[in-house]
Image (cartoon, rainbow, N blue to C red):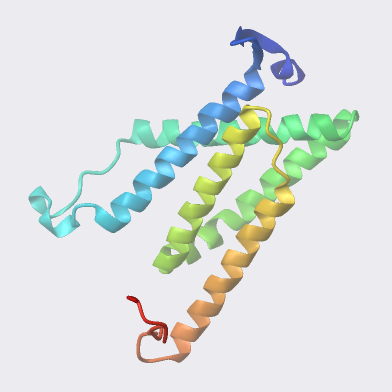
Length: 186
């Protein structure tokens, strides 16, 4: 069934569109939209203390479950399709997918707790979601993006933020960047 998702379901402007492409496109657009909304909400959203009753109205359980299901479907199907493309041996595919899911389950809690404690990490994680969403949309349109570039960009950004966190931890006063010695006007 999963291998069948790569066959065109219909044509759009002379281009065959497969189930995989639809899943990648919708999933990528969802990640871009959701992460952008969350970043905006964290930076510009209404302060919780000003909301009626002193708190913000939360998302409904159904919307949270729907969002989690959509993200799981996108990433699970992408993983399975990738595994199908890497090897013709079904047992190896099954082991790879189960191991990947196990690693995610083991580390989801600790990573989530760490991100919740550090607001700058939360912003970085949301930026990573936008990056992954853009990559999914690009792949949906047949543009291969070398994942090495994506992983390098994410690792470099994470390293810089970890160094910033360490610097902030050592310093009792906030870090202030020095102004450039170059004049701003001619």
